[in-house]
Every structure is written in C-alpha cells, then in structure tokens.
Length: 127
Image (tube, rainbow, N blue to C red; front, side):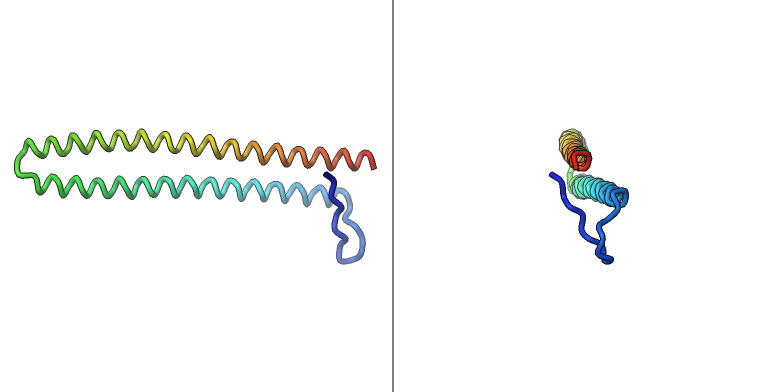
C-alpha cells in the first residue's frame, strides 16, 4: 500500500529522501515506544511481585513472634521457605511468558515495518 506524501507548507511535495527519512524516524520512534512499554510491563510485574514478597516477609516475622514454641517456629519458617520457593518459580514462569509475548510483538512490528518499506520502494520503482 503506497501512501502519498503530504504537501509541505510551501505547496510542494517532500523530496523522496526526506520522505524515506521521515518513515525511518517514525519506525524508530515506534520501536522505542514499544521497548519503553515492555520495560514498564516488566517493572510493574517485578514491583507487584516484590510487594507481595515483602508482605510475606512481614507476616513471617509476625508468625515467628507469636509462635509459642521453638518447634512451631521451625514449622513456620519451613512453610515460609516452601511458599517462597514456589512463588519465585511461578514468577519466573510469568517473566518467561511475558518475554515470549513481547518478543513476538516486536517481531510482528518489524515485519510490518519491513513489508511497508518494501511496498513503498516497489511502488516508487514502478512509478
């Protein structure tokens, strides 16, 4: 799909090199926005997980203080470690899924940009 460039303020169309430069910079900006959004998704996921883990650490301290016997403390700590390990493994799976999805989205965007660039170049060659 070939798009016609917009006329400039001086009533002339853009020079082909300038038009290609604009498309290049728009593609780069689009990829930068995509990368920024990906970083923010990772940050949100990480902070949510760390918040939950800190809350669990505080709960462990409370449980240890309120436990009447040493044997209870050992059971409390063992359960805490088991849950923490399970949650870290689960979080690693979420991060792997997020990484896979973001990689797929990035590849799709790159294919679309490449296809558009090839179609524009082909249309200009024919014209």
